[in-house]
Length: 343
Image (tube, rainbow, N blue to C red; front, top):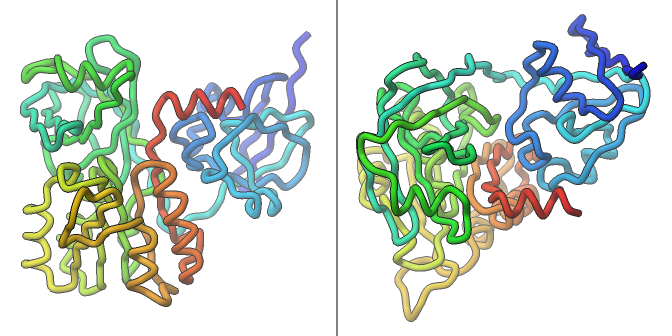
C-alpha cells in the first residue's frame, strides 16, 4: 500500500495527499490545485512558499530561486520538495497577485525578423484557443514542429492581437537552430501559458529600474510599453546589457520612447566592446551602482542570463531595493537546467 502524506494549506481550507516520492507541486497540480509555478525545475522561484510544520527534502535548485536567507526563514520550493511527514504550508502573499486562465493556443507565424546575428523575432497570430490574457513580463511554453517545448517571454503588450517572441540561438540546442534556420512564415506553432511571476506591478507608483541582457529584452519591452502607456509620471530607467554593438537591437524603437516620455531613460551597456566605444562599457550591475546611491522604494524588473540577473539583484539589494521588490526572470538554457539536476 502506497504511503501518502497530508499537506494542509493554512488559511486556504485546502488539503491534498502527496504520495511518497512525489513533489508537493506535482501532486497539487494533479489534484486540480493550481499553485503558482513556472519552470517546475527550481530555477524561477515562482512557486516559493512557506513551510510552517513538517519535514521536506528539496532536490537541487538555483540559489537565485531560493536564497540561503530565505531558506532559513522556512521558505521552500514546492516544485523541488518531497515531504517526509504531514506538513502545513502557505503561499506567499502578493498584493498584486494575478491569475490568468491557462490557454493552449494554435498560432500562425506572420513575421520573422533577424534582430541580431543570433536573435530572431517571431511574430504570430492566434488561430484557435484564445483569448490569451497575460500580464506584461510573463512567458509561455512554445512547441515548434514537434520539437521539445521551450519557454519564451511575450514581448508584445497584452492588448496586442499579435504575439511577439525574441529567440536567441543556442548553437548546440535542440530547438533554437530550427527556429533560426528553418522556421517559416505560415508555420503553425503551439503556445501554452501564461506563466511566471516577474510581471509588472501596476499599482506601484514609485521609481522603476529595468535591466535586460540579450533576448531578456523581450519581457522588459512588454513591461516598459505597458508602464509608459499608462502615462505615469514615475521615473523609469532601463539598462540594456549586450556584449558588443552587434548584440544591441530595437535601439531606435527604445530611443523613440525616450523622446515621447520625459520620465524614461535608456542606457545601453556593453560588456565586451571591441575597440573604442561611446557607449557605457562594463558590467550592467556596475553601471547601475555608478548612477544611483539609494534605490529604496524602487521596484526592479530584470531578465536575461542567470549570471547577469543574479549579480544585478545582489547589487540592487546593496542599493536599498528589497528582495521582494526585485521581479526577475533568469533565462536558463536546457543545459543549465540539466547541470542543476546533476548537482
